[in-house]
Amino acid sequence: MGERLGILGAGKLGTAVARLAVDAGREVLIADERKGPMIELVVSTVASGAGLVGVGEMLASSDIVLLAIPYSRVMELDLDQLAHAIVIDATNPWLEADGANPPGSPLRGRRDLRLVRSLNHVAYEELMSYAEPAGAPFRTAIAVASDDVEARRHVAALVDDLGFDPVELDGRSAWLLDATGPFFGRRLSRAEMTALVSASLRADRLTW
Ligand SMILES: NC(=O)c1ccc[n+]([C@@H]2O[C@H](COP(=O)([O-])OP(=O)(O)OC[C@H]3O[C@@H](n4cnc5c(N)ncnc54)[C@H](OP(=O)(O)O)[C@@H]3O)[C@@H](O)[C@H]2O)c1
Image 1: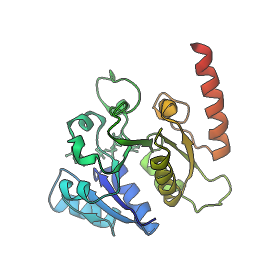
Image 2: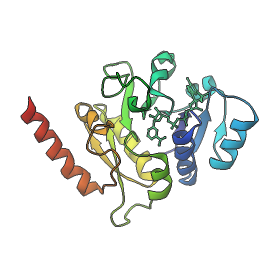
Image 3: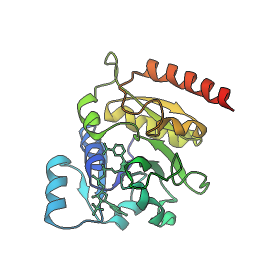
Image 4: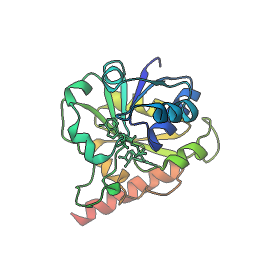
């Protein structure tokens, strides 16, 4: 599609996504607040082919930006720098110490952002080991949730390029990707995930 993927955070998730996206022929820039030879070594070994640049340069020149930083750091970002891009929030509150965070994205409700929630329910090791070409039988599914239909389609195409069947959901269903949701830690095909979405939304309606 010719878009440039920017990744904020060159940790476990960021470098795994960079590896798969580069392998799919995508142009990838990755940026981290850490600097120096160690981060250069990590990126050049795990994600060779991705460009390691400064945070400002990555944000300014990426069409899609993946937030692969701790959940607690997201609200520290200068959100104006994200206004031009499609933003994938892959962050999970469950990794944080106090466990007091509300479900969903810390950015939800920000109408000035083209926000998509995806990748939250898959571990980075699973990304690396489950990726398969389109059409593979029982290919693993990854949910892509947003009310911005065009942004969601771009992220769905990225997920497909990474090696997974995208399952598109509206923004209200983004909670399904949470650590307490039905997808977390499970390897599901698109058909299985779609059935689970219907069952979960039915059950959710019944509890109201
Ligand atoms: N790991 C997984 O399998 C997985 C799967 C799905 C979702 N997630 C989510 O993805 C996020 C990243 O997880 P991870 O396991 O990849 O964490 P990680 O290995 O700790 O990597 C995060 C990286 O982001 C850097 N960073 C922190 N704040 C930053 C900022 N403001 N700007 C630029 N870089 C910044 C960190 O640097 P410092 O170390 O110096 O702080 C670190 O290098 C988390 O929110 C997690 O919940 C992870």
